[in-house]
Amino acid sequence: MLLEDYTLEIFKSKCQADAKGVHCFAHLGQDVSGALPYLNAVLGGFEYLNDPPAVTFRAQGKLITVHGKKIAVNALNDEAEARKIVEWLKAEINSAWEKKDTITPSYTGLPRPGIIEILKLLPKTNCRECGQPTCMVFATKVAEGAKGPGDCPGIGAEEGRKLSAYMSRFNLEC
Image (cartoon, rainbow, N blue to C red; front, side, top):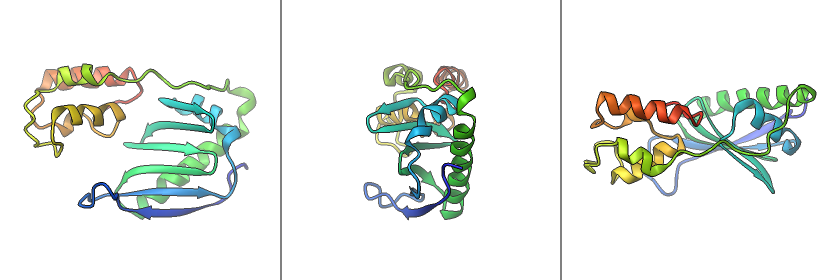
């Protein structure tokens, strides 16, 4: 077993003090840098950094970045959800490490969605009903995997379907 223990740090966003959710860092007791290319291959990270090694992906509706000694997870409901996701990641890291002889490591991320392509599918009214100041900011959140068509009250059914199809090409199903 590569990853045996960690400690959780739960905190609110300093940038968005009125945000309802929390974020977490899991400070890892063991360095998992060696497992990251295998984890990237298994989970399909959309961003991979080589130096220092880190992989970012979207899973369980969250943006997750795994570094050698730390895991960062955004937009959590509470500490219980943080623990559930970090435990899942711990199991994924250990599984990828144990099966590394059968996995082709991946040192690159997936192609990224285009913010302008996403914006073209939005109503472009800047209505703020989604909680974002502009459709461009909303498009950026969609590109990051933090928002989806269902988070835009003004998007039509056809545009919502097209946006979901577009995002699925990047392993970011909305």
